[in-house]
Length: 417
Image (cartoon, rainbow, N blue to C red):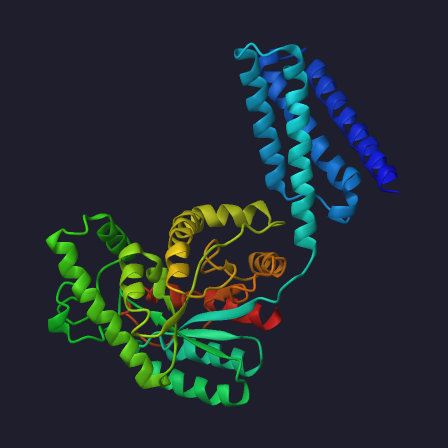
C-alpha cells in the first residue's frame, strides 16, 4: 500500500514537473520572438514556478494542503533558488548532470517542505491566549479590557503601574478574577514614558524635569551596545535597577504578593541591558515568567496588509524583536524563567483586526505544543474612544496610538474572534 501511494505521488509530481517545464519552454519561445533570451528566461522561469506552485499544491500534495494553495513565500523561495542556481552553475562550469538534476532535487525539497508546512497549518494543536496591553493607561483602555474579560473574550492583561488609572483598573480586574480565576495579570514594565515609580532624585538620568521617564526604546538599545564598564552605562544601570524594583513594589502594592509575570511597554524588557537587570533580580523578586515575541509569519494575507506592515514599520519592528527575543531565550532558560511558546502582535501592531488578526490566530493555533512553555499569546491593544489628555499625564508617546480609531477596531475584532 505504501509503495502504491509513493508511486502515485511520484507520478503526480512528474506530471506537474513536466507541465512546468513545458510552460517554461513555451513562454521562452513565445517571448523570444520579441525580446532577448536573457530577459525572456527569467519571465519563463516565473511562469514555470507559478505552474509548479499551483500544480504541486492542488495535485501532488493535495493530501497535505487540503486542496488549497501553498503559502506564497514558497513560490518566492522556489523562484529565487531556481534563478540563482541556474545562473551560478554555468559559471562554475558544472557537469551536465549537475546542471540538469540540481534544480530538480532542490525543487523537490522545497515543495516537500511547503507541503509539510501546509499540513502543520491545517492541524490545530493549541488554543492561544488572548492578551491586551496597557491596563491603567486611560479609562478608555480600562473599559475595553475589562468588558472583554468580563465577557470571556480575553485571558490576560498587562498593567502599567505608573499609568493614570492603574489602581482603578487593577481593582476592577481583581473583582473579575474572583469569578474567572484563569485571568492573568502581568506587570507591564514601563521605562520610556509616564511618571517614574522610584524617587526622581534617585533616577535623574531616566527622567525629565517633571519626573517623567524619557529614555526611548532606541536609547536603551544603544546603551546595551556600550562597554559594560563604561561609567555612564554603569550609572544608568544602577538607576535602571532602582526603577525596576520600584515598579515591582508598586505592582505588589496593587496586586498582592506572589510570583511576578512580566513583559514590557514597547517590549522594553527584551532590550539586553533591561533584560540583564531583570534576570539579576529574577530570584529575589520572584520573576518567573517573561514574554517572548517569537512571531511566525502568518499566511493567506492580501498583499495590501503586507504593504501596511512595511509602510508602518511593523516589519522592521518584527525583525528587531525577533532578534532580541531569540537572543533572550537562552538566558531566560538558564534562570529558570518560563515564557510563551509563540506570539503574534508585533508585525501588525496597532492594526490587529480583520485579516491580520484572523491569520495570526490561525497561525498560533497550529503551533507545535511545547510543555515547557505557556500557550501562544495573541496580543492586541483594544480601547474605547480616548477622552483624556495622555500627554499631560506623561504618556505623550502613547497618546497618538491610544487615540487611533484602530483601538476600537481591535476591540470589536476581539469580540468577534
